[in-house]
Image (tube, rainbow, N blue to C red; front, side, top):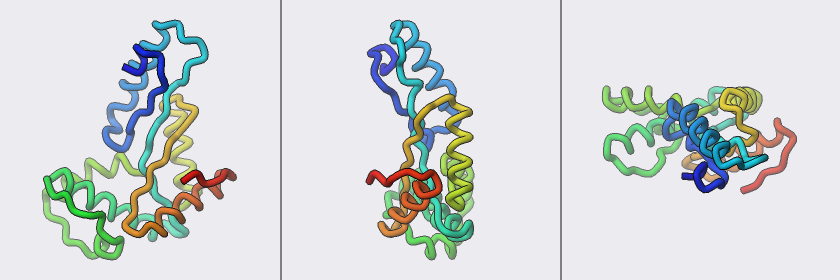
Length: 158
């Protein structure tokens, strides 16, 4: 619809990473069909989390993946703290959903996340990546945004 209307478009990579290429191509095709000169190539919305260490970032990521796996299975629970996710005994169904959901999440040190986001932007030919970070503790979320923007040399827009 965004392509037909000639408006900007953001694709939620974190919901369906396997559909990003097709969705962005369809958008660009429709936009080009409208002769929309200088139109946006689209925005890629990515769920990402970073921390000072890879281990800390992984713990935060497991919290998000556990939350999303449970949500997929009909359990609408709050995001668990990282320590709870680290010690969680995954059911086979949770582990199956986690495997699927991990592909839509980028995590690591600030440098690792920045590199992975840049690679996604290049792969999908977008000029803008919108980062969405979920953590149980708001301080972890803000720290994640700050670390990522510091490695990029930008300012935080929260």
